[in-house]
Length: 133
Image (cartoon, rainbow, N blue to C red; front, side, top):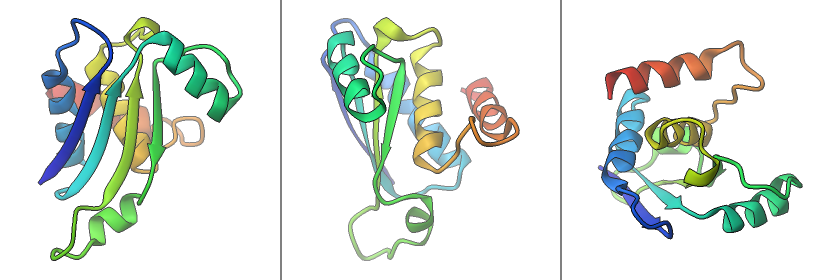
């Protein structure tokens, strides 16, 4: 079971397709039990968070903040609470991709993928998941 706490501070955003994208990415990566925070926020809040964590004082499309990590999520004991993968923050005003794509992108970062360090693996996985949505 994947538990998602979703919050939108942005009017007119349908969270259901974004939540479905996170669930699909979890299923694709064999994560059966975890919790994920999903926040859709405005550009001012995203700029503040981006400045704090990346020293870039402008809004960005998506940020991920891992907590327990993928190794723990895959080996977590069944008798306890779900492992916490972390939080995904999405800013529609900074988005150049569909929000569902950004959700998948953020989830893959929570699982340890890094498109800046791999040879295209993360983005290929992302494209495959998005194509199946």
